[in-house]
Length: 90
Image 1 (cartoon, rainbow, N blue to C red):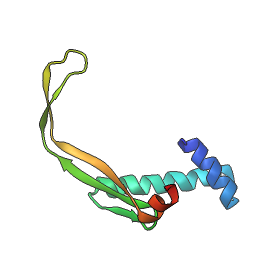
Image 2: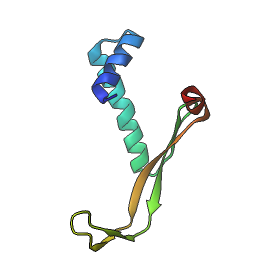
Image 3: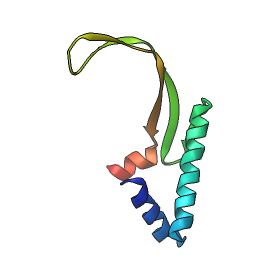
Image 4: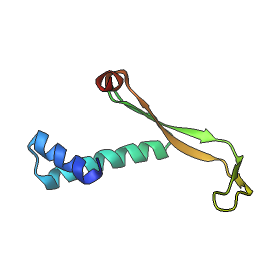
């Protein structure tokens, strides 16, 4: 499901217009992005938790040439599914 399809589902299930549903989805995603950029954790009970983790610098390989390249340290987003979501999928 892409963002446009998600907006359509939100509009159908909530009774919002498509325009209002798009605003709502965009604002929710923007709020999650901003919290993660600030290093905060976002926990949606029953769904899951978004967090940011630091990744150390490491050696990798170029896919094209196969030669070793140094990958810089950085931060990566992490999602951990909640128990309710896991149960719903099984």
